[in-house]
Image (cartoon, rainbow over all chains, first blue to last red; front, side, top):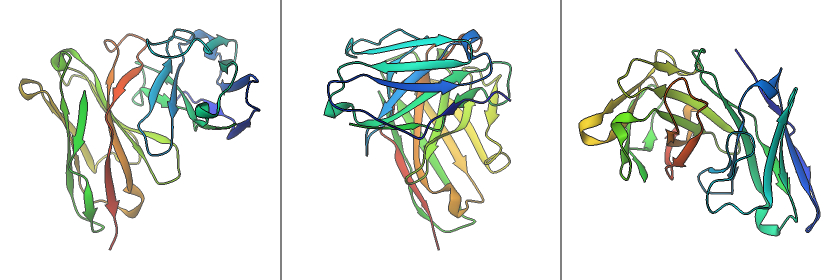
Length: 108
Length: 120
């Protein structure tokens, strides 16, 4: 079945740009979605369909997806962005349709 | 909104039934999932169910022990968990899918989670 991989951690200084990647074979041919999870809280959708932002998500959050890597980009990082970030892919043809990355801890 | 309940402390080999009460959208048209998170670990998909239960799937780690179901008339999702093991400990979340089975589904919103602790 399809798998995606994420680096365990990314560190960035406040005000800089964070890039969190999600790797998978030809992932550019799939749609990737991203969730933010802060300690003790439920996951929150921050990007869907590679680059679309739900209402209420700051414009500082953006996404891209090409070839074998999808990327979540957080510009002008703030202390409040410190969280775990997960990528997700849906595979309707699989008996394991929900594919989740292992998560990336963003430290600001 | 999604609201999970039914978590608690159970001994290994025991059973629990989790519930997810749904409001604010058309539950009977929606794919639903359960995702869990062991303490200090990442998110793990557990099970999915389509609106008419045509498609029901489980992670290998729970197959044969857990059973997902839904009551469309009462806007509720369930997870029956039997033969519980220590490594089933964690917070269990329900979440709503964005589209039909053949769409590129994402999940929003998520419930706040219910804690399951399996320990002797």
